[in-house]
Image (cartoon, rainbow, N blue to C red):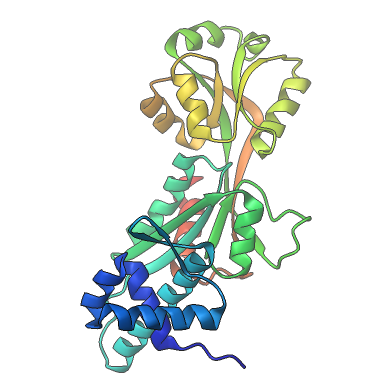
Length: 299
């Protein structure tokens, strides 16, 4: 079995945290040649470079970023263990690492996560954002505590994970004040031929909207498709077209983007899930998020 030298790992962790070997030397009370030699020994043992140099700056490589995440967890837990054994209450905050699928509206994600801030006086939330498949891969490696998304775990993904329904909300159509006045009349039939800004078809919301348009014989003029909901709303704010949003954050959308409600889409809902590796939610901050979602956010 290959054993990792944790002294070398600790030196690497301090270098990454401080941003330079010079700064790390001051923290560790070591000379630069000695610390550079310890880092080189660790890189040789791993067989990978942990830093690349850009000008005078040290930048973590992809392997270095992964090693740093593990080192952060190892030495944080080590400090907590020391405090516990010495009978002191840990000063470390609750740590929650969240993956947010790109299809989840930022306002909905915040509404869900703020429950953790209310529940714990000391908490550190780290948010990753990206495609669901990549986030689920990180979840399987236990890098993430939870993934927020708009669908259960896809059948095509071969990882052991569990989908927890956090809640559901209706869908609202928004537009600038002139557009809202125009299209409120005879809504939803008035939407036929209207200029629309929509999510790309990799989102559950877009597929639901396409089906709703088809059933109601409405043919929107799609002038923009967006993976990022904030960009879509920014275009909507400038009057380039109508756009959909989650009813649960309708007030926030109207206020932030200075738009008005055109109407609510009858029979169409958005669902939001928290995906974890555990069948039963164990992480206290994740449990707070799940409880708040059911009792207040989507109630």
